Length: 133
Image (cartoon, rainbow, N blue to C red; front, top):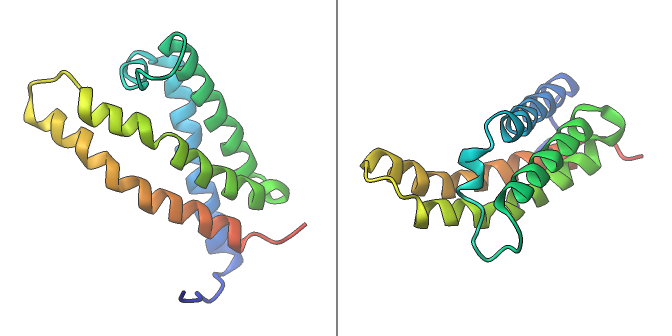
């Protein structure tokens, strides 16, 4: 595995705040416009999709806060990587079950899948570059 040289503190901070902003925006959207998120909740999950939409939005908000704060940034980075892995089944569900006939929507559904990789790597970089303790 290649070792990267540590980034500068200001660059690491910007990367962390950027990820926190992305996660925070997603958290707000889960509450303000839950319907699109409801539609991609995997059918195999028990209960109502709205519960999972709100639960994932709350998780994204908590992880955003953890990534944004320097004291919890390391744990927040690990949590963000885990969260991105955990929501991958919803992205697969979206690609498989989106009932849109428009080819653009189908392309978006399938195009989201490989985007999880850079998100996980981004989160891991934040976790690894944050100071311990």
